[in-house]
Image (cartoon, rainbow, N blue to C red; front, side, top):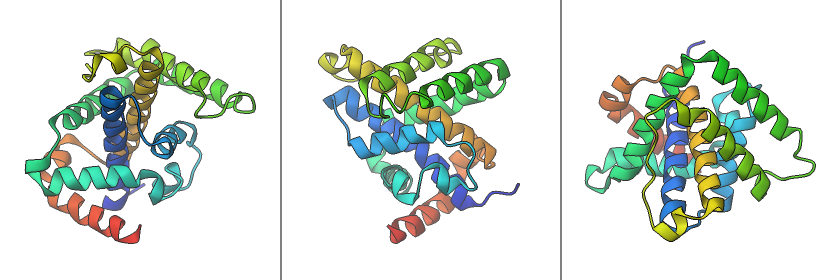
Length: 206
């Protein structure tokens, strides 16, 4: 299937959204609940008809589109930390895609978590913990590990650590989607203008 630059931009914005939320939690101990839920919901949307539906709507990835546009359009305001997380997620996804057994394991465990949504909502601490454990048991073993920096009181909180890992897993999901849409590191490095244009078109619709 041929995917448009629009599809690529949405999925790349999904990676940026997860990375931005990780930074917020690591530095302040909190992030917008709706943005977190929108990112985590992508982990349970596989049988959908379009990239937009993975995020529920463009509103579901609006924060990521804004961050992506900011990073590409104004290099002076680029956040090195967020960029580092994004590049690391793209690299880890490439390793994951070469490990089908791990992909199967992640899929099975996500299905199990989804089956328990009658008891624990997506934003329940129990769900964060289980999603974080999936990341810890699988993606973390691929190496090199993503070193999340921030304020020690927030980093040392187990609850925050689970949220960070859950969001990194969501970032991997968007990285998978981006690759499936034809995204590549070359496009990331040299296709800046096309992504900026798509971001502006998307933001105009919000």
